[in-house]
Length: 185
Image 1 (cartoon, rainbow, N blue to C red):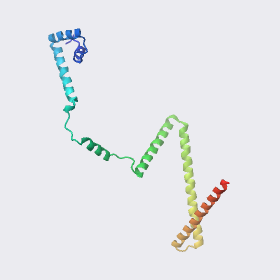
Image 2: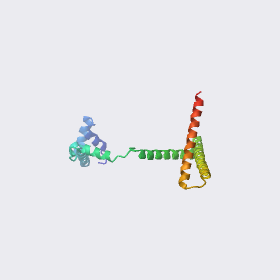
Image 3: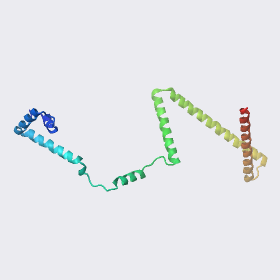
Image 4: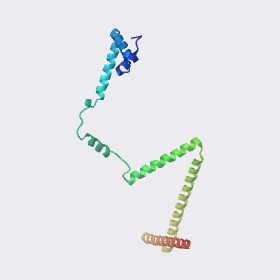
């Protein structure tokens, strides 16, 4: 088979040879046992592959196989079904986005990273200011309550502090309403 053309054997099986080339190959196959054996190997292989790909060769499936597989797959699927899962997904997305910005910023020193850093700094400053204001308000209410109650029982002090806090909240609400009305005119 050293001087033989193996491509002609594949073309012969596929029916791609002209009648003259097919005739010449048939004569060669009768004279060359190696090519004849190669032809038989390729035919056996194609028959084996064809049998494996036929629909009749598969195992018998239950009549409700698709329904069982679909039901099993759907019951195991987890998605955003509740508020907790949504919050977890949102948190992971924000973490990935922030990581991407940081990584891109370190690679390119893009202005977007500086904007993002500035935004974080401003957000932290606002949260700290609101926290400090809330702490100062609570401390002020505690000092006023203690001064007015003279250090009486803790229950009376807490009740007075609650009343004082409600008065303060109502005063702020009335003030905002007056400000909103004055802006309408």
